[in-house]
Length: 369
Image 1 (cartoon, rainbow, N blue to C red):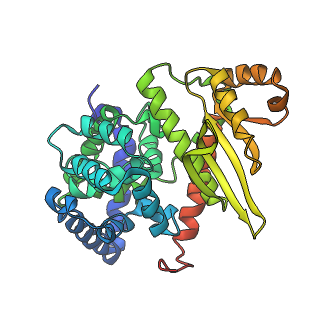
Image 2: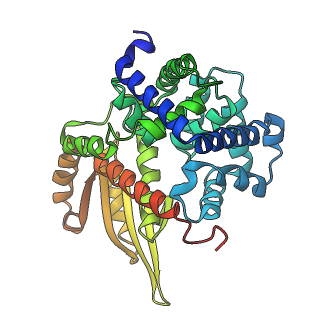
């Protein structure tokens, strides 16, 4: 199946016609969009590989802070500092430069980056790529999901772990087919950044990400984690990082890979300081493969830290039932353990991201506050 045949051409043409009418009726707005696209592309294209590798931390903060994907973070500097702390600045710069300018195909560069860098998801990755390589790489985010869903494109990745380099390349090819149709309808110099603006303006009312996410949550009990080791590791890390994000958005300090007691390093913690009284910690362990007994022992050891007030195991429905049965035989653990389906974690993260993006777009708090 070609990229073009995955699109409902009649629906696409209907929306292109509407887009053309809107362009004519609001020419100033659309000209401003063209200028904005040009300005943003010039900024990111101006960062060559050599220049990226010479970035200092202030340069890196400026580079990321301009991204639309950063709207979910009110305190952008905090997020940038966390990325640097979690990945190491030199390693982070090299990985980012390789993603954008590496000599391998985008499939390999994408997969290499997503397994080596913590805290940077497809929305941010693809936005940078789209601004630099606007003829080849699409911008993939919630809006793109809804837009392509409205055009009838099948098997869209709902979650980050489903968006491999291969699938990203396939979706970019579909976006190229849309760009070709836009060009054929007298939209000059249409590229994949143009497609993103088109999707934003014309393809949001026909789809609903919230409905899709609710559908995913409803099927949470029927979506086992994949057995493939690489996929399993990636999902583990994605869930670990998103648990940290959720904690941050709820007002905690979220951290990953944290030692909370002797012999116990856990995937994620939420931590709050209560005045001068001390800390409250909630511990999360993500189980995608491996020994359930090892997971439970790690959680049990974490309870040796008196600041730990809650422990949560995160997995799929089938493994959660096994975890509960094993935990019931450990008196100190059974009554304290809580379990959370990984699909529900992903849905909650998506919902909170939408809330934060909407509130932060209001600009109520200055960026430097």
